[in-house]
Image (cartoon, helix red, strand yellow):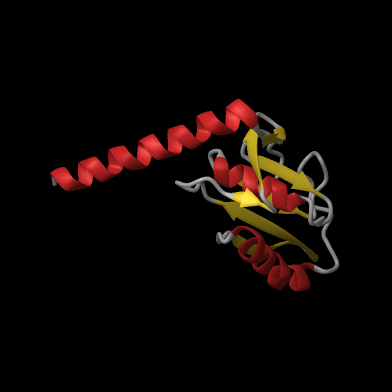
Length: 136
């Protein structure tokens, strides 16, 4: 893997629970993928606890945000690493009462006017879909 980090790809050498914010941010933006067991250049370095994380991470995602993400065990030679694929969700997703958004290669908490604008955008798009469904 020699692809660079960008808006929808993140490389991490090991799992930290703070990456749940990244997952929340991807769900609120355009979706994305996190690789655990890779360096900042996308080179696979492997992780020792891949099988344990394969069970724990999906549970943490569902328990804290109520969403589902694909968590896959991958191999490069003898090295194990994880791929976490997060879809964009049609409604706003929160993590521990806060909202996050992935923009460019940064993760930020959404507050104030920015949060209000995003809520309106979600409500308007849901109402449009509802109107189109009634027209069918």
